[in-house]
Image 1 (spheres, rainbow, N blue to C red):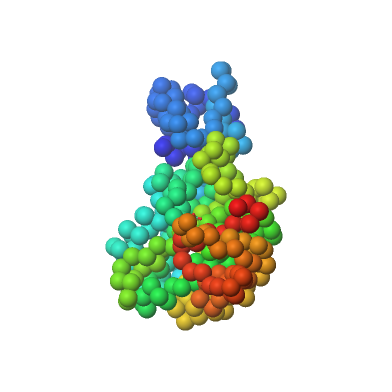
Image 2 (cartoon, helix red, strand yellow):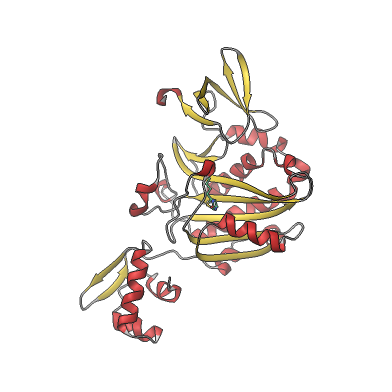
Length: 326
Ligand code: BTN
């Protein structure tokens, strides 16, 4: 991917092949080949003979400095390393690798990217990650007291992401257990937490967050569930500002987590629960338990009122559906 060329075309204006070639100091044939590569990566280019090329609607590109500019003082202090990459397999994978090499206590290691070619979702699903449209963000943090201390963390992260969305004017965002960000019944984003190191002692947690911001039409076929994006909510925040906003909420949460745990987040999570008091099914393999969703307990487990009383469900294998959807 030729990022210099993309930066020129990002303005959405027409650029002649000759002007692009002159600016890059290469031949028109080389430019043409590079433009082809951009198209292959999913970037929607319009070409008109004797006029040139443009990206319809332009591109909202990310830069480290734009993200850094949006951070508040606390987040700046907690930031160890921030990298905005172009095209990579998965920000979680890159962040995990970086954490194993250079994790530092009380400092976040943050990886974002314009595009993921193998974005990871929960339960082995792929996360659709088109170029320069959405948010793909991973935050690595060192944990001293082992994996058990992380119970409920992904729920609290959901609250932090919703708050960042509220800051940019997305007021309809809510949460669906365990860690989907939704608008109504449509998924706006998701969270994938991965751990590396000694699960009983010092280890690293990588908090991966994906948000649909401006999903292009060409990527929509790859999504196998009802989805929403931020632009559909009537606001068009710059992605760098949105990323900074998420970090402003997530970094202090991580810093305080080993002391606070889930307890102070529980009521706030419940206030944002999109499925509260709704008839639901909990699916565990072939087993299905029907009941009424009753929020979460102090550990973050979902509580469901069933014919046999209130039952708690933990773990990543549980999914939630409205009864009407079977
Ligand atoms: C889900 O299935 O709901 C979780 C989706 C998590 C996607 C994000 S995008 C940034 C980070 N890198 C990944 O590969 N996955 C997470």
